Length: 422
Image 1 (tube, rainbow, N blue to C red):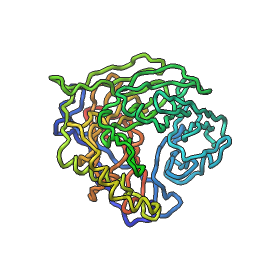
Image 2 (cartoon, helix red, strand yellow):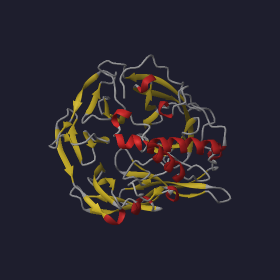
Image 3 (cartoon, one colour):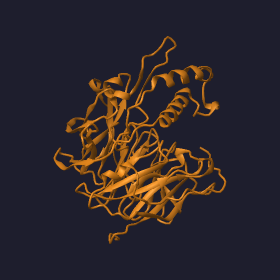
Image 4 (cartoon, rainbow, N blue to C red):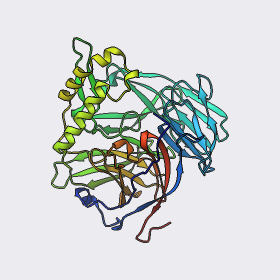
């Protein structure tokens, strides 16, 4: 993406309690006054030393430094707390402290930074010195998957990184899948939980035709996959995982289960949260159908990067994709989760193709505390909507995009009313 852009005006991020159907989830503990987000730092520029590529992950170090993983970079970019560049951690390669592909996720275990790509998880001291690497490749044919190191847990085991292979239907078409825990040498330790794969019925599946074109891909409405292609998020300290369990939209009072499970499999939280299912409108279906068809046809890739045969075949691919996609009657109740560094749980209840993103914030016991709403810029491009990387009751870190897709990292202070400040 281009690093050049004209002046950028982000749509105002405001906090408000949603006035539509999702408000039915409100509980007595929720503050009835909106939470406000106030920008306190913006990192990035048009073409300066702090110009950014699209950011994959963000972490704040023990000393307040800002660590970013950027697309196409085989290292971690480090910035001082005021946003000034402060060097790099790691580099391209296959040895200690090196990455064979661009890293996807990272975090801290005490004073050690871990960084994971598709093949290896590296560990670094705060000064960037590599101290350890973990690498394994574990085939799991019954799941159509292969596992590599991913997120290290508090006890030294891993939530593995999953690669779905040519037998992907064995995983994608399953309604429940195991969240496994692997040792540093690649042995399966146990299964933490069986995780519901909502919308498995709507995986977009087409057998290969005589010209070699087929599809097997999750539906655009499928909840965001954070761990091992499953809608699970690990606690910041690696001691537990958070996910959505059973969803019961047909009950007299529809609910979804909010769970926090310890890495040994013990249930720390199991709360049935009431909600009102939101219908997928005709307009939303058409919007998603056209975007999906454009992606399959290759329209979203610059023409200079597409091979000639892909350009010639674009119209056929677009037509097949339009016909292949089907839609559920209602939106999933939760689209993405964040485990707050303060123990809070952030649930993305609404997002594109709706006009605004609605986050609800729950406490450690599953009680709703409040909500935050973020809006796309006036262009209506969903990519211009703030993407939240990290959140707590006191601050939110997000990526926003300016004209010509120039990315910026923004820190917001959370202003909470109802006597909850601090």
